[in-house]
Amino acid sequence: MANLGIYIQVPFCQTKCTYCNFHTGVASPGRFAPYAAAVCHEIGYHRALLESVGVALGDVFRPQSHSVDTVYVGGGTPSLLEPELLADMLQALRTNFECFFTEITLEADPETIDAQKAAQWAAAGFNRISFGTQSFVDEELKAAGRMHRRADIYRAVPILRAVGICNISCDLIAGLPKQTHASWRQSLSEAIALGPEHISIYLMEIDEGSRLGLEVLQNGSRYSAKDIPSEEAMAEFYELAQLELKSAGYVQYEISNWAKPGLESRHNLKYWQRQPYLGFGAGAHSFSGAQRWANRHDAAAYVGAISEGKSAVESVDTLTPALALEEEFFLGLRQLSGIEIGHIERRYGVSLAEKVEELASRGMLEKRGELVRLPANKLSVSNEIMVELLRSVPVVAGAAR
Ligand code: SF4
Image (tube, rainbow, N blue to C red):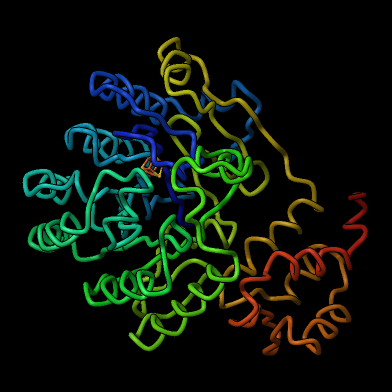
């Protein structure tokens, strides 16, 4: 029986962080229960809803062939929801799928955590918290529009451990406004000292999807846009993180992710390994192996469609061999374990050996038998290497690219 991951999107936040480029919004608590009910309905009727928009599930996701082992409830800030609503969503999964849960993650912001909520999360089955730490420096948190402060992080972690949630992941952002080499070193060392099982490090993205990104692109000064570290500084922050986390016993297993041995995110590994997953909720994405589809982002439109008994899917893409191969590189090579090049050559009928050898001779790839991976010191230029590898394959299995 194959494993299946389930993602549930909760697109609500208390405020909008200046750097946020996600499709999330501030919503009144009165919208939480109807939203959760819509998610439960979508879970209950997913097969009929998907077939109505041309998603061919076939045997994929049937209880006889697939059991759900990982769930990830992300956002947004899903920890804002009443715990009963989160429990309802997990119960809907148990009712509608064969479930052998090994990892159930909840994204939680530090200021939203209290002892009662944490106990209810644990009772519902959540056993992993992905914690929006971002920084341990109040000045940076404030400039970024975050609701929590350093003290909230120290208050929340013991609460989680006390209720038995002992798999904790902390996120840090390299490149926040007002961040310096010294403050980055401080955030890193405080995160390590806190002893989470998993740490994710994200580089600040400057694009027009966020208020801060737009301000930087327009050369403005709002949102502390002038106080963003340079690209060179961000690259140095990342390299420092690689060194410090390694010496603290964390293993880097993906471009942005480090874990204590054996505590990698089982759910997120499915994305990079192109295993099937189903997404529920506004803006949630899904992958069957042959098709990718996505729900509409607007939470009100999502609830409206589901409550009328309609699908909330707004796009369905059937993967060509060329697109699938592109994904093998762009997702697979994010993992430090690398990809099996022989397997890919056989699967897509392509020859990669010559290009791999060339890139390896330039120190851009590492080869170990059939396995090919990015060297740890080249992760910051991963996209360029992936593009070069892809360019060496002009035509894939008869499908012009
Ligand atoms: S909490 Fe996360 S999702 Fe919500 S606004 Fe901030 S960065 Fe965006």
